[in-house]
Length: 104
Image 1 (tube, rainbow, N blue to C red):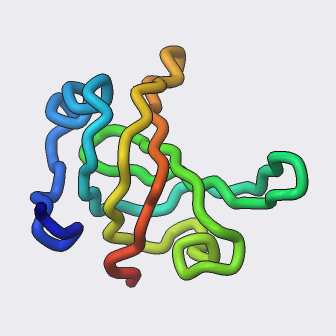
Image 2: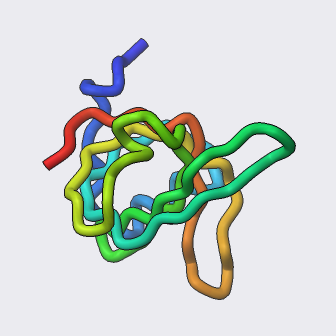
């Protein structure tokens, strides 16, 4: 099984849209364009919107983790699993199990 670092970086919007419905694990490199906080019962997390390949991907992260503390404008290299859900109006796919590979 390939590690996150072995995944090819998804660089085309069409390729990202295609794998969204297949719920694949992908690697993206982009810029954090927005962030906010969320809650599910007593569990608190942070959501991030990462702009890459002409598409914005929304994912969740731990508040205190290195990805969760990334401010808007930060360039990140992330491996995540697409959920198959998409905000159709904005064409934003949702991802889970995000792991930060690099941050600049």
